[in-house]
Length: 84
Image 1 (cartoon, one colour):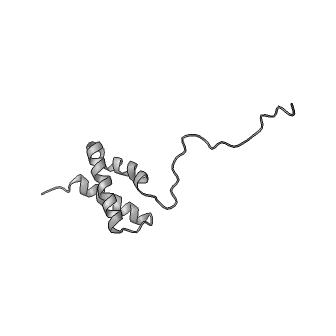
Image 2 (tube, helix red, strand yellow; image 1 turned 180 degrees about the horizontal axis):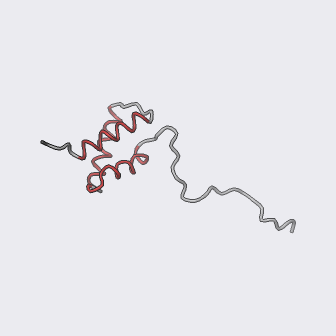
Image 3 (cartoon, helix red, strand yellow; image 1 turned 90 degrees about the vertical axis):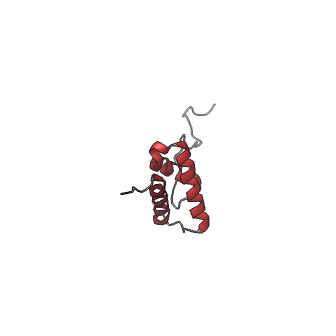
């Protein structure tokens, strides 16, 4: 019995994720998904699925997705020193 290649499973997972996130699966989206899996396979073949999911927000603009901030937003404030 032949087992399913990890790249095929990863591509299917990426496409399923995109579809469920509301992304229309156009030929361009499918091509970008293929490139994502190919790059992930080259970079981290031992953990392909995790690498694909990590790269997903870098390659696709996902509806409702906010990337993590490296630092909190800067807001003007007062230290409470009063008038000088």
